[in-house]
Image (cartoon, rainbow, N blue to C red; front, side, top):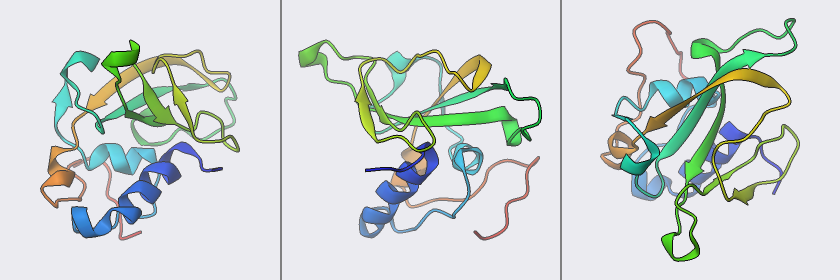
Length: 141
């Protein structure tokens, strides 16, 4: 399945819209980040389905940075039985395929100065999907 990282999250939420009670707007990973206010301090605090966001600086300085310099998102998908406590599902390349990755950390060819942000999806599980960010104003999308 060829989806970029934020489109994968949108597709999952769309497919599970009856469960979640909403459809996420058509914005990118920066918007998705802004809708999840519950932080985890480390990957060990995440539950399956929580999200790992990555902010960074594009190597190509002509690219416009996204809000929060957010560049990527993946779904945390641990499998302790297989030794995969750092495993994720995501699409790491713009026109790549959705894949299971054995480790959420990786070296990007598109951006550097990577910072990992761990977010719990509890607010989504409670049926709430709105921006909690006062800095960025998102319109219905």
